[in-house]
Image 1: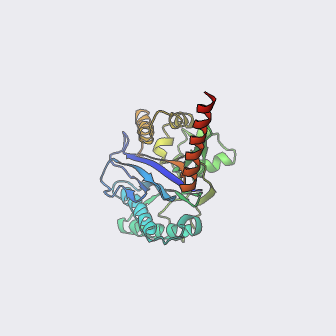
Image 2: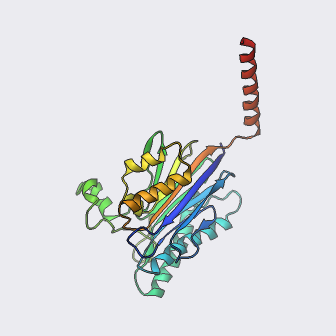
Image 3: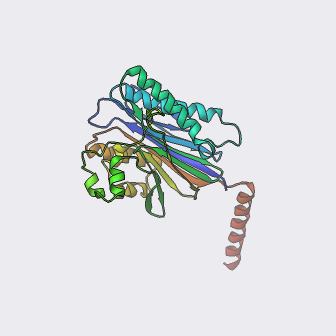
Length: 289
C-alpha cells in the first residue's frame, strides 16, 4: 500500500533561553542558520517515502546550535545520496549515526567543551515506518484516539522509573530530569551509541509527532492528545497550538514540534473502481426513486 504524507514543523526558542539549540529535518528542509530563532515549514510528500527528524542540541551558546545543525545537515546529505531501493534507517541506521556522531565529536574537540545533540528519526518507506532515537527527544503515534510513545527515553530518570525507584509524577520535578545517558558527541571509546529502533506497518490516518523535551516538559500527554485529536485544526494549526501551549506554560526550553499524517495513496485501478462504484450506487438510488 502506498501513502501520501502531509507534514508541518516549527521550532521556537521558548521564553527563557536566549538562543534556540533545537533543529529539525523533514523532506529536505531544516533550520540552516543556527542563529535563527524560529523556523517553520509544511508540505506533502506523495511518493510513498519521507524522512523526518528532531534534534535537541546541548552545550550552551553556539555549540548546541551547531551540534544539532550538524546532525540535520548530515541527515540531508545521506538522504540525497540514497539510491533507488535503498532505505537508510531501516537497513543500515548506524551508517548515519556513526558519521553524525564523529562530526559532532570533532566539534566538541574544536570548541573545547562538552557538546552534543539528541536524535529522533522517523523514516517512512514501502508501507513501513522506522522510528529511531538517541536521548530524550520523543516520538509519538496518535492512533484510535490514543497517544503511544514509540521512542525510548535514554535518561537517568527513565532508568530509575524502570527500576521502580521513582514514579513518573516524581520525575517531572526531579533535579536529574535533564541528565541523558546517550547522545551525539560521545566518543566511541567512552560509550558505544545504541539507538532505540522500532519498525511497524503504517496505517492510513496515523498521526506521528516528533518533539524536543521543550514540549513534553511543559505539556502533559493528555493535553497533547487533545490537540492532535481536534478535527477542525490543520496540521500547521496543531503544531502552532502545541508550541504556544508550551510557551504559555513557561517555555523553559526550546520547543520543536513535527507532525506527520499518513494518507492512503490511491492508484489508478483503485480510483477507477471507486468511480464506477459511486456511479453504480447513484443509479440504484435513482431507480428506487
